[in-house]
Image 1 (cartoon, rainbow, N blue to C red):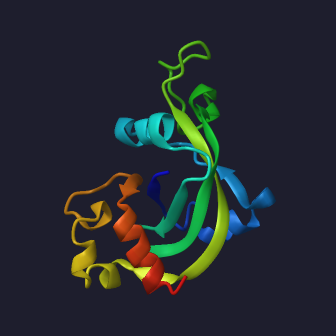
Image 2 (spheres, rainbow, N blue to C red; image 1 turned 90 degrees about the vertical axis):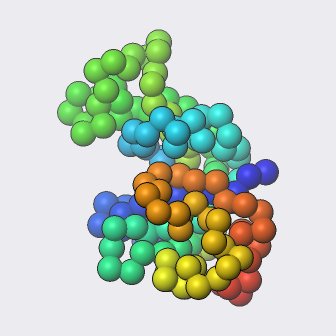
Length: 153
């Protein structure tokens, strides 16, 4: 089992949107970064826990816990010429982009990036590193446990 953090801009897709999705599940599609794609395609497994993180907003931070509920499969948005994530180099026989599905487990209090930065136990966490722009990052098991304690879960 691996632990993950996924970022979403709440004005595009929020924790509330996930909660309102059928079965509180969504395809994590539209990812167009090869490293993040490879995390989904090669390393994420059903049952892996995920922190849901709001980014690019007034108060960025962790807003909930989800889990991977479907293994990676080709991202349909790459094949749709009307979609902003269309990729003309992708084909059904040779897809370039993949997505997993995630299912909401629990909404949490907002654990802001400002609060996360206060703890030396989290200083190596990727979300806190300067220049990190990945929408999907692994979380160390000790960081996961520490954050659960902060959230009182």
